[in-house]
Length: 99
Image 1 (cartoon, rainbow, N blue to C red):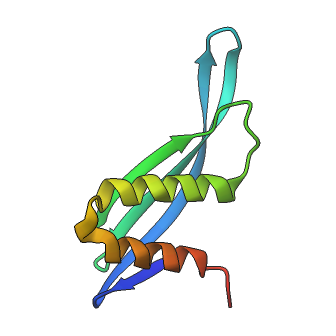
Image 2: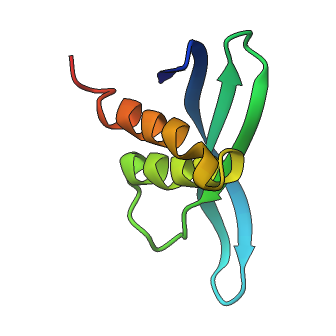
């Protein structure tokens, strides 16, 4: 997903992995991990976050993307001074699937 803010390009993308975990009382399970990362216009990574789906939750990549993006935005752009870039990111996210 591309975000253009004040002439700067920001690329936000997701990757998905499955990891093995041991949960007390349940045993060995596979857990889905969603990684959201941001890169600048020079393809340098600015930051990344990951979230892990609880093994009893439904697998929904759209929900995982939304939660991980919120975590990334809160991590990289906290505070009122970053309100405009956060708004640009969410606007790009909501319109990314519209032709």
